[in-house]
Structure formats: structure tokens, C-alpha cells
Image (spheres, rainbow, N blue to C red):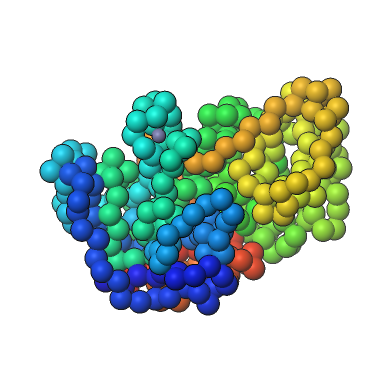
Length: 345
Ligand SMILES: [Zn+2]
């Protein structure tokens, strides 16, 4: 089969589109899916570059997100059959620890994700546990079905499970355009929130308004914490979605109302910002850290997509063999929504 692998860590030119042996069923609870589309995430870039502390055996097929058709089913797999169109829940765990036994594989100490410790979705076929396959919500294309699992799972856990978003609340989403931020905008709007977004690009702020954002702040031209205060009658917002970190961190805390909640799942602009501890206790702030989410949360998202008819925002489609261009687009932050690879085109 054709697949994209890295043989060594480095820049986008390390991605090799090449002929690779097809996966074989060895575990009776696994299935093989013929992929139609795979989506990019920032984790793919980190895996490509190499992250300290995360051993990836090389060569490795990258890609955590995908959608396609089940073509082979292990004899103990009951939830899917051949021919089913499925989207993929990305993480799997050891099946034995306290986290895995309570549907929290994503917290397993032996977490294995597609494209990291398992062969990923930048390929014509992928092998994974049957329990990680879910029916594609009606009406979604394979490209849309590949684009939402990782970011919507992350956003759902942050906004719905952790921050317990309510209709009418004010939500600030930093760096709109990124996959998590654009998904957060969509979920928050569908939940009836008033959404303020930030970007360094006026063009992206205009696009965000077309997708329902109530206000856009260009953080290069003005201090977003001050502007949020002005927009909310000095009160601040109830929730900040910060997947950026860096210099934004203290401003995110400064933009929160008393009792506000900050949710974080990334630090693309810096991992060790200074922080304002008195602001946290004086203002009774809550900070929720999160990555991914449970299968139950994934089921909730699928139901939500069915009933709300929400469609994920697709930025750009690339054929699988043009993966290096797709990675560069993501690394340069040019996207608004998800970058998707079409497989077998
Ligand atoms: Zn486990």
C-alpha cells in the first residue's frame, strides 16, 4: 500500500510517500480500515520533529485522525462489520489499568495513539481496535469525518465536561484558525454562548465572524485582556480556551471574570510563561488541563453532530502524496480549520 512514513525526525522534507506492507490482523479484537481521508493535527508535527520523552520506533506512519471503510474484522469484534463507514477514536490504552478500566484510556500510562506508538492514518490501510471505530454521523463526507475526532474530542472534554459551558456565557477562544480553536468556536456557539475570538490576522477574524463569532480581536493591534474587559462591561468572560500558552497565558487569566474557568490543551507559543498566582486565588479561577477524552465523550460528540447538524470546518484538502505541503501550511499557521489528506485519490 501507499503510505507516508518518517525514517528520521526533522522538517517536512523527512515525510516519505512510499510503498509499505499492508497491516495484517493479529488480534481478534482488531479491525482493518481502508482509509479515505486523514486529517493533520499539531501532534503530527511534534511526532515528525521528535519529542523528548516520547520514543517512536522508526520508520513510522504518521497521522492520528482518519475515516474510511472497515474491510477486515477480527473474530471477537462485535461493534462493526465489513463495509461499515467509520471515523476513528484515536487513543488506546493497556486495557488493564485503573484508567482503562473506567473508560479513560486517554489517561493510561501506556497510552498508544495512532501515528505515535501505533502505525497511523497517512496510509491506505490502518489496523486498530474495533472499539475505536464509530459510525460516521449522517451527511458527513469522509474528509469531514476524518477532520473532527481529535479536536472535537479535546474541545468537548474541555468545554462541556470540564468547564460545563452554559447558554449565555461569554467564551474567549484564542488563536482562532487552529483546529482546536475553530472547533471550540463551533461548539460554544451551538451551546448558546457569546464567543469572542483572537487572531493576528484580520482575514481570519472575518472568517471567524462568518462562522458565528460575535467579536474578533486582533491581538497584535491591541491587548486582548483589556479589550475583553471593555466588551464585557469590565466583568470578563466566564471561560477562556487557551491552546496557545506563552505570553497569552497571563492575559488569559486577566480576561476571566470572578469564578471563571480557563481550559488548556496546548502551548504552541511557549510552555513556561510567568503566571499571576494572586489573580488565581483572589478571583476564584479554575484551570482545567486536558488532552483528548473518553469513548463516552466521543459518543456524546457523535450524537451532538447528528442533532445539531454541525459540520467541521475544512481549510484545505491535499492528496496524500502532497503531505509535505500540508505540513508546511499547518506549521506556518496559514489554516482556518482542518487540513485534510485525501487517500486513494
Ligand atoms: Zn491503561
